[in-house]
Structures are given as structure tokens and as C-alpha cells.
Length: 116
Length: 117
Image 1: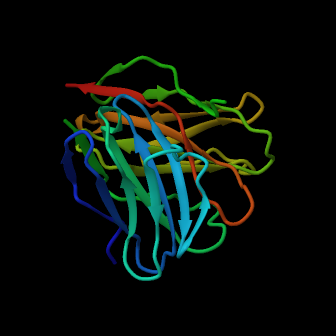
Image 2: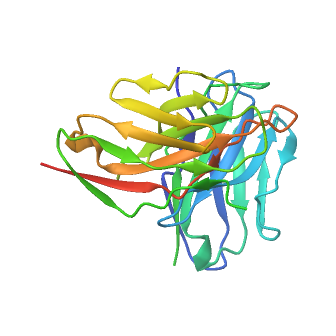
């Protein structure tokens, strides 16, 4: 039973380009959470999605960032016109539907984005 | 507002010694959960231990235990008999219970631990 799969593991983009980060949740999970980790910082919540719905985007920057979780395929975090400050590790986690109580969120290995 | 506070500077601990990592939290919820994760230099996030707000016993998981003091809103992680492989960043996280099945976690900034032989 594969865990949360993220790709690519490392991504290098020049300023102004677009970055697309992919996340495939664990089997049976239909909820996805994206987090960003800046250097020397903890994980900051960005967005929570269910299939075809954004439920909570309270942590998403207002511009250039978007996320989707289509009916088929992985969840995508998209960053348009990247800037150096977007350089960070981006983690995805998934959960099954409903409250999961004492169960932890299981994270993918992250995508390390470097903007040059 | 910061919900999870981890303020210790980087810590060096002798192999086989115990180390305590501090975590304080802020919530007005009666029901919440506290989690600790380990992040080694390779970068993945590894779940270690969980404590529920209504649990009367402190959680234990192998060499990991939680010193949970609800009135003080603290959930300190204790690692006993440190091993070289324990060198990592350690993050405290909290789950409140917003409606709609949102299981998101709020993380602290982490504690750096280096185990020396």
C-alpha cells in the first residue's frame, strides 16, 4: 500500500516560470493537504482539498498560487511567475473522508523547489 | 496568532542520554490532539507520537514519551536512550477540530537535536 507520492522530488525554475507540483494521495484517501516549509521553519498550512473542491484555502497566498484536485489524477499545486521567495519544500498529506481523530497526517517526501 | 511554540535553541545530547523537547500550545477548544514529527536531514516527515486532550495517561511509543500538562498547555517530548539516528528536527503539531472533516495540523518551528557519540 503505497504512501503519499509527490513528484518531482526536486524542481528548479528560473524567476518568472511556472512550477507544477504533483501529489497522489494514499489509496482510499480523498482529502489532500498542502504545506510549505521555508528554510529553518516549520510547515505552514496552505490549502485543503477534497475531490473537485477546495475546502480551506486560508493559507494560500492571494496571487500566483493555485491548487486543484480533479476527479481523476493527482492533486496539483501550481505556482505561476515564480520568485526567489517561493524557494521552499512543499509537502502534501492525505486523509480519508471524515474526522480522523487521533490518526496522524501522513506526508509525502516533499518537493524541493529552487528558484534561480 | 502562533498556536504552537517551540523556542529551544539547537540541542546537543550525548548518546544514550535522555532529551526533553519543549512545546507549548494555545487553543480555546476542549477537544484537540497533539502530535510530534521527526524530520531527519533527508527531509521526510515521520510521525512519532500522539496525545489526545482527553487522554488521562501520558502517551508512550517505544523510546518516545509525552509529558502532557494540560493546565499549562504543554506537551513536551522525551526521547530516552538517544541514538545517533535521533539527530533531526522535531516538530510539535496540533489538530483542532474545525467543522467539515478538516484534519489539518498547525506546526511549531521545530527543535534541532544533534546526538553526539
